[in-house]
Image (cartoon, rainbow, N blue to C red):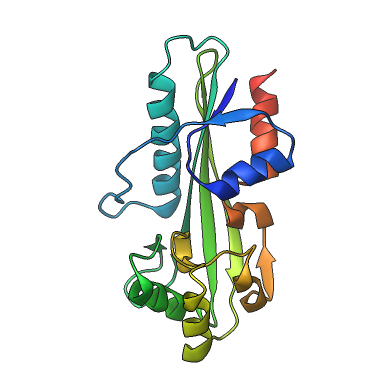
Length: 193
C-alpha cells in the first residue's frame, strides 16, 4: 500500500499519471531551514520527516510504503549562492521572488523519501535547472493577479501560465512540478528487489 505524505494536488496528479494506486495523508512538520543548511540536505530532510511522520501513525506496517517529497527553488542572490525560495507569504513576497528569478537560471530541488518496514529508507534529491526570461513589472503583476504563484515554491508553476516565461530547462520537467517521476519509479523498483 502506497501512501503519499503530501497535500500537493500536483503530486497526486503526477502519481495518477504514471498509474500508481495510493492514498494521501498529510504530515504537519516544521519546514524551517536549519541554520546554514544546504538546500539538498534541506529537501532530503523534509521528505524523510514527512514520510516518517505518516509511517509512524500506522500499526500494520508490513506492506506499507510511504512517499515523502519536498520541493524548493534555489537562486543565486547578493546574499547567498544557495538562497532557498519557498512558497510566497503573500503577493508582495511573490513579486520579490519573481524579480529574483527574472532573467536568471535557478535550481529546483526535490527531495524524495520512501519508507517501508522491510528496507532502510531510500532518500534522494533531484535537481533541475530552470531558465527564466527577463520579466517586466507589468508581467509579474499580471501573473500574480492570476493567483497561480501563491502556494508554489518559487512563486510559479511551470505547468501553468508561467510556462511562457521559461525558455529552457536542464533536467527533469516533472521535478519542477514537484516529483521526479523517473527517479521515483527507479526507487520503487529498488524496493521490490
